[in-house]
Length: 195
Image (cartoon, rainbow, N blue to C red; front, side, top):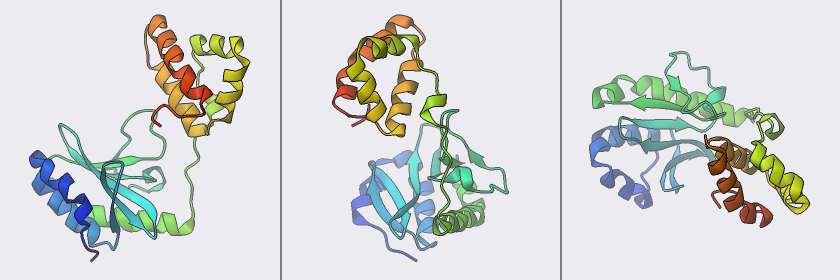
């Protein structure tokens, strides 16, 4: 069993609602030989420096998120795609301590499969950015500003997708236009929405 990382302890103590569930999940995950790290402000579990999964909490559940969960077989049919735009990640959700205990074997099995996926070098085939809808407001701004078009094309596919989803999520044209205006300096600077 791997050891706990003191840099991650704060996460468990601050989530009192899910403390018992998180502590059991932590024990099960570490028993699989993963290394515990702190990434993105949450416990991240790695195998040979490659991300396998994260523990995280929400209002109604806690979960172990498999970074390449879309590549797992999910024999039990328990993995959840958090949103329709999530391509790689899948969550194994828990709502009670009893559920955590009952699914110990399943969690460990899925973790072993996730390790095998990493060892094999499999990659998730992401939908290309070109297949996402480009909102009219952004399309117009790109046409008006060649430098913006060049800067957007130079962004990584993930950053491009993030912007397109952010713009498209607004229901009102005025909101979409405001988002485009606010993000234009970031794109011109070569930065992602969350950088």
